[in-house]
Image (cartoon, rainbow, N blue to C red; front, side):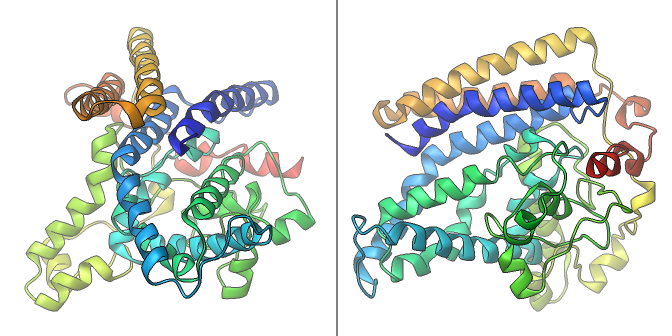
Length: 380
């Protein structure tokens, strides 16, 4: 069974858990879902999986070449300890990829997609980048050098990814001793927050121990609820723009910089760094969390039904594509992928505001208040 087929089988479970979390939120009076945001997040996850159909072969191929030609030795997938050791090793390297995704601008350009939602729920977990294949594979080559077989690597990578699904919720509070060792909802809420005290913390995928060892751990404080999103909000439901926004901004700053050193540094510096001459000519407002407004354009009932119907078509086409990707003709595979992307764009367009209706473009409630249930949830 291919990894794409495993994702197909897991999708009903993902959606059922989303429905369950939504029901729990309603019962508690603490709903954390909005239709437009949830469709956008799940849609970005769908697009990511569709893109992986075309890129997975290259990334796994590079790993396999490294395993076959530069490994120090070759471990056996039939040896029991290879599997847990590979999982711990993968999680360690994932920590550094994840940390790099917040500290290196070009890596942030890919990872930012996962953080763009201003909500925090299980649909956020599905919100994944479509451009992570560009550089992410580099971080895991040490496993190939150490002789971890491609089959083991692919399996533990999937386990690490699937584990992280459940931690994207506000409906589970602190878990005592578990929080000290593992990535858990409380720890990961901190990771998604833009609050100064929480910024760039808690990178661990399965184990939070790495953050404690390398000085990037921060506990969730009940006195300061997490505010979710990014410091440069996307303010769009367009899945293509979600994946390209930061790349465009980096390319513009690099083009405009006078110094060749600055042209390169734009891509490698921490996110938010800009050459002095560029910042002076094209200034951006300083970040102020208290002035944030959640992006929540009004959506009519008719638009909601149209978006929902289009999204169901997307799910059906994606299921067909992922389940049969290994046996479809290339032209049909590309056609289905393009159809999915176009339909996802259409879902975003239906839920976007029209014309110059500024009133519809932002909710008037300040962002900190949109998280009004956070502290209450953690007191349970």
